[in-house]
Image 1 (cartoon, rainbow, N blue to C red):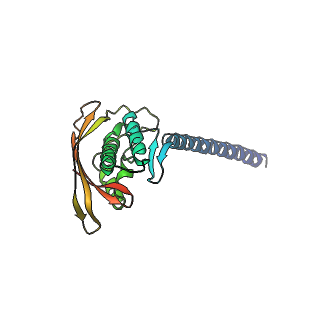
Image 2 (image 1 turned 180 degrees about the vertical axis):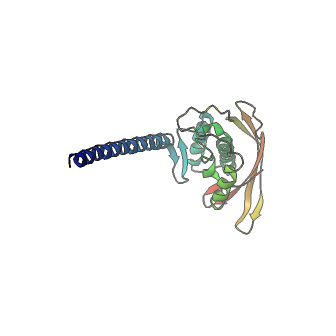
Image 3 (image 1 turned 90 degrees about the horizontal axis):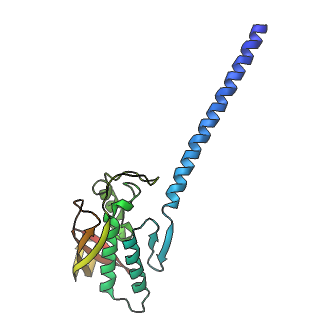
Length: 211
């Protein structure tokens, strides 16, 4: 009888210890997940927006992108917008954001999406993840050692307007074709010449094609 009581007592103690260990492990896992989530959220804090256009500037954007964003904001706040200037700035912002891979948190953090024609955004992101962004390593903790490109300057070489259509989805009689030269902080064999086609989508100009 005494042996049975001892066994029950030992089993109870062991069960209690196991329960405590499980609770501690769950607490640690939840704490780690919460820290990762908090850091991810804080890294994409919105600093500024352009009213009526839904363009956003976040704290993870490069200094050069931020300066271009300010130019775009000033232009779009004018009573009369110079559409060619607008097209040029959107093209420069897109190229800066897309090819500044060093600003991306991981391969899923594709730059420039907000400037892409809305109907194509899903396909654009999917293709970017399997090509340009495919090898971007995670940088949630800011300790990534991988060498990635950072755009430092974009110049418009040529801009013109022409008719553009694609698969009967997009039709624009006055689309903009913009050719740009791209400079990087360090040469890492990324495109130095980019051509974009921008189409009208209500009051916005959005990128429908990139070469």
